[in-house]
Length: 151
Ligand SMILES: [Ca+2]
Image 1 (cartoon, helix red, strand yellow):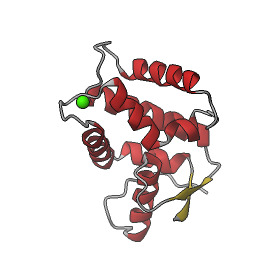
Image 2 (cartoon, protein in one colour; image 1 turned 45 degrees about the vertical axis):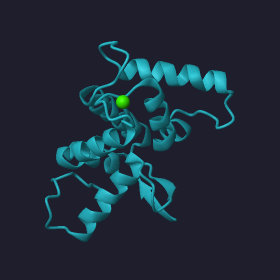
Image 3 (cartoon, helix red, strand yellow; image 1 turned 90 degrees about the vertical axis):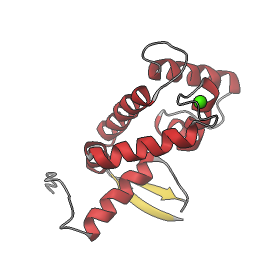
């Protein structure tokens, strides 16, 4: 387990790196699509939220929230992902909503870095964002974008 510092610009850089972001989205989507039918069902999404740990860390929900309330919350999030109300979430819907969520997190973080404790097998998007930043720092001549890193 390690600790990383991330702030809004870390998250924003990750989302704006289309290749990395889309790759992460596609990997997550494939991993979450347990029955491999190409769409995410309500129960698959519920597992997704639990594994991405976005809810507990970023929707301000206490981990001790009663199951009924959590189910309601999961349902309302599902509905916001399910743009065409088809009852399932396709890759397109998943990508666009993840983007919105990550940008909302970036706004919330602003320029105040937070410390995140990470496990090595952590697959959360914030971990991926942190990894991307670390890779850029280690490889300054890589395809890093001209992100304004004003101090
Ligand atoms: Ca599925």
